[in-house]
Length: 111
Image 1 (cartoon, rainbow, N blue to C red):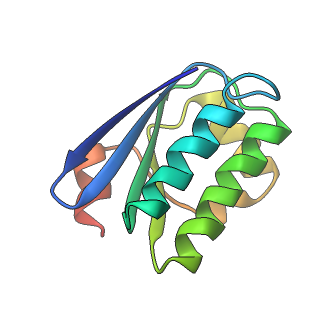
Image 2 (spheres, helix red, strand yellow; image 1 turned 45 degrees about the vertical axis):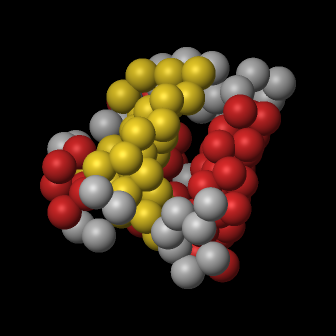
Image 3 (spheres, rainbow, N blue to C red; image 1 turned 30 degrees about the horizontal axis):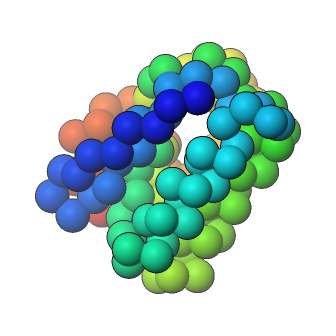
C-alpha cells in the first residue's frame, strides 16, 4: 500500500493506494494517521479511490483514525469509496459514522 499526502486549504488529504489488509498497509495507514494527529491536523480526508479491498483489520484502523482525530478535536471524512469498501462499511453500519462523499471538492467544502 502507498499513501500520498497533500493539502487543499486546511484539509489534509490522504490518497490511499492498494489493499488495506492485516500485514499489508495497516502500519502505513496507522503511521500516516498518527503523524497527522502529531502535526495537529484537525481536518483529515481519506481518499479511497484506489483501494480495491479492505479487511476487518483495515476497517479497524479506519475506525481508529476517526477516534484518534476526534480526541484531538479533529474530523475524519471519507471520499471516493469503491463498491467493495462501500459494501463493507454499509454491512457494518459504519457508513453512518463517517461523512462520505463522492466528490472531493464537496467533501472539502463540508468542513
